[in-house]
Image (tube, rainbow, N blue to C red; front, top):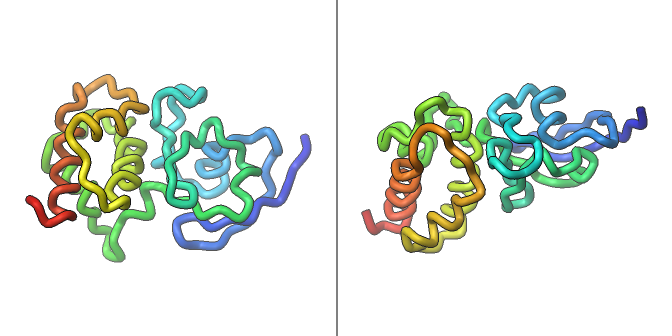
Length: 160
């Protein structure tokens, strides 16, 4: 097994570790850094459960090699908590809108929502639906998730 040193920034911390050159970013984040919000779902890039933000853009970490993380800034759901463990506005909106049932898909959905919200743009409901379409959820039927993202977007834009 060939290993390579990967230096990157994860959730605001500079880190480095040796990884198997065939390992996914999901495996590195979960196994080496214990970031369990990054879920192992389909492992082929279709369900979105493993979504993380890399240099301000969402990626399915299951199909992103860990070695590609060299020099990158990576954010997982754990980065959203406040200093006292308080939820971010989008996390709270998921709670308030009952957008969470089993919770397995939730971290990936929230990271995509963060990418959407950080653009500072206003999206129509159809545009939001399309931007969130890379996720599979077997529990909620999506409407409450869409509501949570839309409400948070409008609050951030001062239109709530």
